[in-house]
Structures are given as structure tokens and as C-alpha cells.
Length: 320
Image (cartoon, one colour):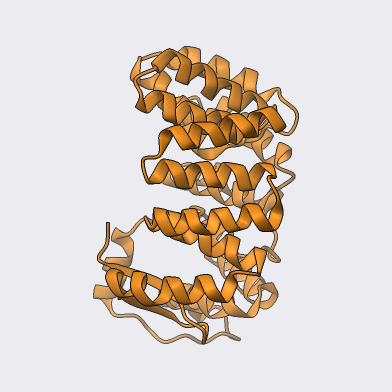
């Protein structure tokens, strides 16, 4: 755990502060500031739990239950805060209440599974985890645990079958995404592409999913297939530039530099203002001969050393 915390101050600036000072000064200040603002308090409470301030996160979670009532997300969050501080019995009580009120809460079953696994109840934990995925097959942490449990037992083929079954649930896109990733690792490109396309379709052409699909294809070296996916699903109006970067990198790798520049210029024209500079920075790192062809966008040259350093980094972007 880091000794420093990065947060956004009242002026909208990202700053770093010592963890101890953050706990003594910033947390009480923000709790007081957001105490009667449900949305701001919810966001801050999630940051507290993420950064390991379980006690303060628990205090915020109790207040959220007062503000929102005992709704499913608030109950699950309270349980997570209990889990972080080792109060597993209290967490169980909250989760049992959640399941009684909301019998199809996938997150509640997943959290129960985590507690059972910690207590050494492996079989019960797996049953709860699987039930949670049946109710909500798009849970990221639950899916990661599910995949790990099969791979740890060297049951890869059985896992692929289970993922296909989960993928049949209405709205289930994540099982297809994971199925695509695993079959891509196995070298079964046709099945992987079918799974990736199904994930995008069932996620309603989600930008997040498209970016991850193109990132995984690029990382695996399937640049032509990446281009096919991008040509079908990428939009220059996406909120973030990262899918476009994956698309441009694949075009450059296949000697389609002119088209890559066109994609980047179109994206720069359409994307929200905060990301226009990000696109400009990306273009500045491109080979000078590509930029020279874009007469409307003259760019400064790059030092050879910088170019070498950029080549060593993974160019494919994934959702964070």
C-alpha cells in the first residue's frame, strides 16, 4: 500500500499527499462536505474503500444507507466495507439481508463467495460464485475468480463450456469476452473472433468492450483482424481516444499510414476537448514521414532515442 494518496482537490487539480496527512485532514473534511450529498458521498466512499480506509469507508457506507435506504447497492457496499476491516460476521449479516430483500443480487452472492473462500469453504464458495454469475454474468471480479478456479484445477475445456452456457443468458457479454480471450490464447482465431463480436453485440456496441477487444487482438499480433473490428464498430465520436489509437497502430503496422493519419485527424476533430491534446501527443510520437503527409497538421520531429523508447512500450490500449 502506497505511503501517498492521489486525489482531486477543490480546484480540480490532481495532487499527492502523505497517507497519514490525508487520513487526518482530507478525509474528515470531505466527509463533512459530502455528508448530505448522496452522489458525492458515494463516490468518495468508494475511493476510501479502494485506498484502504475501511473504517472511514464504513462510516460513509452507514450514512449512505440512511440517505438511500437499504437498497441493493448500498447494502453490498456496506458489506464490502465490513470485509475490508475483517468484520466478516457483520458482512455476512448485511449480505444475508441483501439476498433476502433482493434474491437475484449477483454482487451479494459474489461477496458471500469471497467470505466463504476465505473461511476455507471452497465448495460452498464456488456454488455461491456460480449463482452470482447466473444472476449477473457481467461482474468483472466474479468472472476473474470463476476463471481462476477452473484454470487452477486445469479444467480449461470445462471452463470454455461453462462460459458458453453463461453467455446464453440475456444481456451477458462478459462470458463472450473471456471466451474470446481464452480461445485467442489457444490459437483458435475463428472462434475467438466470433466470441468477441458476440460480446460487442450483447454489450450494445459498448466503447469499453470494443477498446478491450481491439487491445487484445493487437497485443496478440492479429492486426488485420483488429482493423476489421475497428472498421465495423469504431466511431470517431467515442468518449475516449484509445480504441482509435489501437486502430491507428494496426493501420501503421500494416503500412496504411495515410489511413491511420486520417483516422487520427477525424478523431481529433470529433472528440471531447480534454482529449484533443492526448490525440495530438499521440500524433507527435508517430514517424515524421507519416506526419509530413498530413499537410494541415505539421508536426515537430522526434529524437531517435524517444522513438526507440516508444517502440519498447506496449502500444495497445485497454480500459482502466
